Image (cartoon, rainbow, N blue to C red; front, side, top):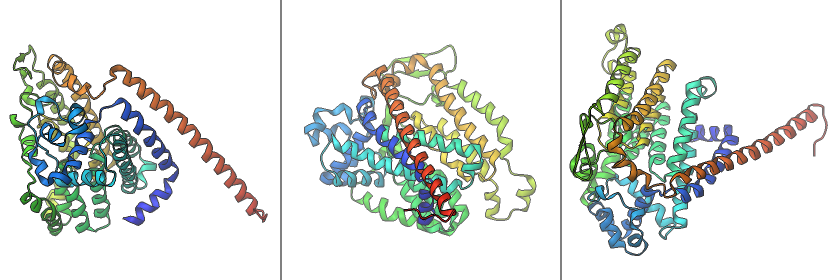
Length: 448
């Protein structure tokens, strides 16, 4: 894996330099225009871990901010969840907590430069993810259009998650992509350990566990070992995943009456208002996106059914392997199940496209994710009276400058354009000099 990563870093060195420059420009711009509440909250819990240990899992954001005092208590709204989530304790698995605990210990001191430090680490991980994706896509990144579109889409998503949001997604994806690289190399034990750590950072990469298990069932022991070495012991030390479990179960104890997923069938005929008022509609706001999605799936899913002859000839786990394309294609439907789904969750399942060997199936999978994204936005429009009075105003508090945030985006685009032009001219100049040198050497001239 290391040799493959090293080769790709060398192969894509020019583009990685540009990516890093764009990322470093984006960090301070995003810090000024966006309140990165998730990063600030994780930063607070990371600092608190060294004081309270795993007892932080039993403290809500507001309780912890009060206990920490100082800037945490005086500027509470920038690093705590909204009021309607005020009863939620820390819900991230232990590896996610460890990341922020170690990062804040390496650069002590709350706020200020520590914010930029955390974003910098995530930006470096995000750029490593680009290299890992290039390793997995191999020649397809040059020859196949869907691979290039996926790579470009992940670049935008990863830049937002790292430089613009300070979220854990780059760490989750890094461990997940490492697991896939190791799987392709036949190192299934190491792949399972990497996947286990990914799941212990944020749980969504668990969707790949069945696929790795089918590849080498005995390697599940390594996955269990990574879990036993981290999750189980720390549970006895006070780690509590009750909030995470309530999230999965759509419990009213998690978000009360607030639902932020416009695709959730629970918004079928009426929507609860955070104030306690129920809003009724002449139309079924959550059913409309669901019906469109089901119609789309009915039209496209036959491509992913295995051939009858393949099923008949397959034996044992081979029967499950031929169902892999179908399994992966069904995954985006998970987003309809949970009441709490933020917009960026849509791309959580994007890297699963790498499991497709058939280009037509890969294109269809990316189209489905795109369709679900449009349905998410359309669902907000169908349920506009509810979202404009509840979740949307809260989401917009992440942008304290309002519409002026677009000026920040324009400024970032301008700086990116300048960086691209400087990068392009510098490398074109180097390539011209190298070409002249090669010609001179081919003529037998001495180049000093």
